[in-house]
Length: 138
Image (cartoon, rainbow, N blue to C red):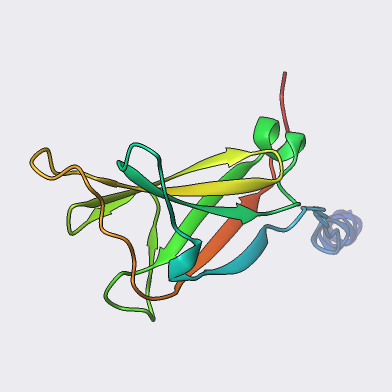
């Protein structure tokens, strides 16, 4: 009787140990886009309060605007090997961005009340745009 009970216990243990659970996750990967903004790409607004660079990003569509997340990084104004996430303020310039269907507008405004004119970048900047997919839950 003990041998039979021991044999059943060993068989059950072996059966439970050999079960393997596989988790398969199909995720859409993030998409990253790199753009170079030249100094002459910055356009001064008619009121003189901000510079704007427009990036045509065809991958930004209504689905991106409604459901997905977008991160924008620019090369650091001093260290061109590093990125800084927008929005940020550096040396009285405030950087921000606006998404629209088909692109991104990056704005530079002065954060100084005494001098409302922003400082135009004098060297090329790299913009890194990361689109993060998301499952919309109504």
